[in-house]
Length: 236
Image (cartoon, rainbow, N blue to C red; front, side, top):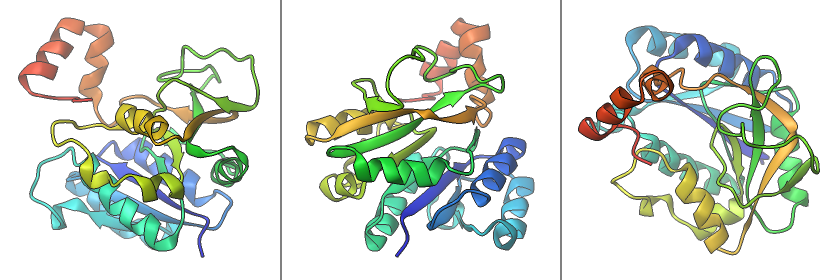
């Protein structure tokens, strides 16, 4: 039996995708790795097909499963939930702009096994200089190596326990949203579970690499919110 199912949803951003997959392939632990390709271009799709054996992952091209246009984060989560439950294993989401360490996956699993009634266990994100960055830039370095948090956890690098997966069916996720970090974090608490942020586990996050238009939020907020509402982007 595997200790975890690890997934990476991919939408182009080939450079960071390569870094993410290579880092996961070097990680310690007994886990299965699945990459969900969400209608990426030919270059990214060809890379994923060619490198499955080298990096020991399975690729699922969502264009072969659905005609719904990207983003298909909900579908990836639903399929991953079924796969994890079949293995009776937790689900770890590592996004395609995150670079994990060799011990990240094994440590997340160990902490989830130690923590009281865990729902989600997330690694903290840092920039390439080691500073806490989006979405955890507000966090202080003081505190315990890992501790319960009342804030929502991002799916940058986060474990969802098998207990949570058994209690809430991702097929109930809203069709009006694109991203589900906040909802799934809050649902964890509604189920009587606890969420934990692990400060001793730092993963490098290169934000918005697969959605470069999101950087407009900082450089041109007016255009960002105009696109967000007119094009119904980034529905949280």
